[in-house]
Amino acid sequence: MTLFEKTTFYVGMMLILVLLFLIFFSKNGVMDYGKLKKQESGILVHAAQVAKENRKIEKEINSLKHDINYIKHLAKHEHEMAEAGELIFKNNSERKENMP
Image 1 (cartoon, rainbow, N blue to C red):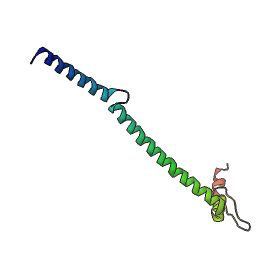
Image 2 (cartoon, one colour):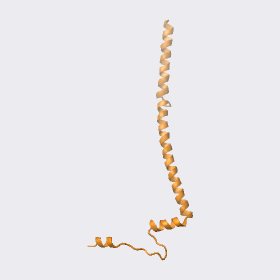
Image 3 (cartoon, rainbow, N blue to C red):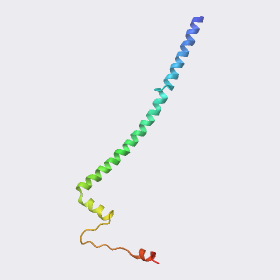
Image 4 (spheres, helix red, strand yellow):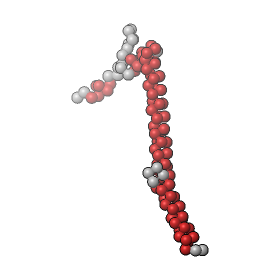
């Protein structure tokens, strides 16, 4: 092997090593691609959760607009309201225990 062939071989090998280094560790290289794929999967999971929550809220809005029984249920259980003619019995034993 002549000196020219040896030099060409080593320069070629160095060029290949530099290109491999750039492919793996550059700004848009393989390592960066892996990080971006992980970030993408996290964003997709978050987007799925938000979409599920949106469907739940849309269903509740639809029920509030059109379902009178749902509105009555919320008024009765969450806002402690009663229908006309309905009797409400409260337990006063807790209040008596707290009195001195």
